Length: 346
Ligand SMILES: *Cc1c(COP(=O)(O)O)cnc(C)c1O
Image (tube, rainbow, N blue to C red):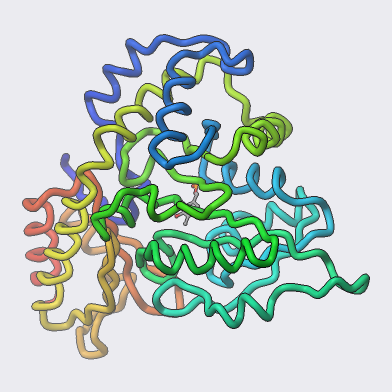
């Protein structure tokens, strides 16, 4: 590649193998359940996560929204982290389209919500209050810096949900990154969850598509939600063909992205003028030291103009830059990035 794009793992392109499989994919009308490639992807995804059924959706946002619409009635409330993707970056779809009220709780640096906060967030049976229906986790937690959430914590929240008659949904956009980080079977990370969304794009490299899993009855309702959201596709097997490679092949190599993120973090931390902030899974955050002598936007501009390296400043005020490794970022690319940053800051 003639450029190195670290802005996100969402920029990853499909692999050659995916493009070939897409060209050859057997297809049918998926609204009639007639697409064999989509059917295969849904069956394999459900089995892999240890759930009864799955539905292919166009994006993670659509998967999360289908889940919330299928689980909750209008006027009901869900407990969710204040920095969660669902609350911050999905346009409040649950409220806009589902009449669902988010009750937000602070997310700790490790991506979790305190159990005592969860307990206190449940509304009593009181006609003044919306009925609390669901609790949502995010794994890996995006705004906490890509930190993976453990099976032990998830089990505690699942137990809390069961004791209180709540549904547990996991936004597992990068759940396979979490499985790779802990080196565990993904089933253990979603064991107590009623539903899980995960992305086939991002680190898994498919060009589009996400999966929502849960019980058969739940998935039937989620498919209805997908339809009203305009998300039912016809010959979607061309996308599912790439999804199958994402699921069966690409997930096994995510640890390599994590090792590369670690190498990148180590390399960056040795450069005078760089203040490394964090590295978890495939995420790296850094800032420029006050005496680095380069304003952030000028630094980013120079990297793009002179070196074809793309980075995006993160969170405006925070003054940080976020990097995400993925399939198209290899060790040679990491060496190029650290020498370019050294050259700019020297
Ligand atoms: C990417 C992402 C989503 C879904 O995003 P889409 O762009 O709609 O596929 C949901 N949650 C998290 C944590 C994400 O990182």
